[in-house]
Image 1: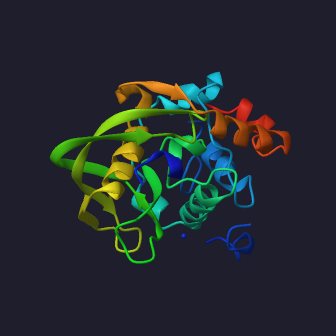
Image 2: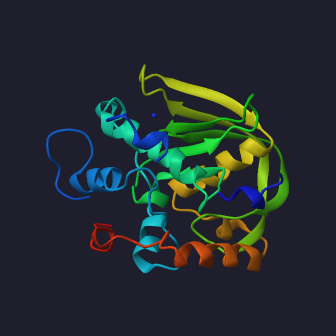
Length: 231
């Protein structure tokens, strides 16, 4: 989720701290491991304008196993998702695993309701209940660059995820801006985009100009392996 369109984690020393195929023994599938390890820190973010990306963005995601959650690969993925959403070329407040090539229920998002507004990672995220009335507000998406729309979201949500250390289910009740981010990212895990819910979607020239600048620098080049990946 793009920051400006809303009202208002290790295998090695990790890259300067922000620098379904066959199943083999160990966590994650072979191609998933490639997606997780192929970049130093910032991952490629899928966009709806790419046909292969769009198929992935529309696919429902599945939970991670206990083995996967306690693996070094998961720690690397969580770290890289935070690095990606915080990177200058993305500058977002939320990111879901399908956006970086994985059909898994993991999101990284900024907790504006906590001191210091930290980025946190939530594996096996599910929304248990929507609370309060619906509030309309503008949204954008890193996977739909150059556009924004007005979306009605619940004032609050009760969310559940799995603590990767204890493997216990954790719940939290969230309201306001952060609740909107949770809803936006949870939608991604079910193959739903904000444009499916938006009352209207308009062009945003400023964002398009910003993306064009990063494209010229090669920041959005999709790797040859990903183009031959399994979806």
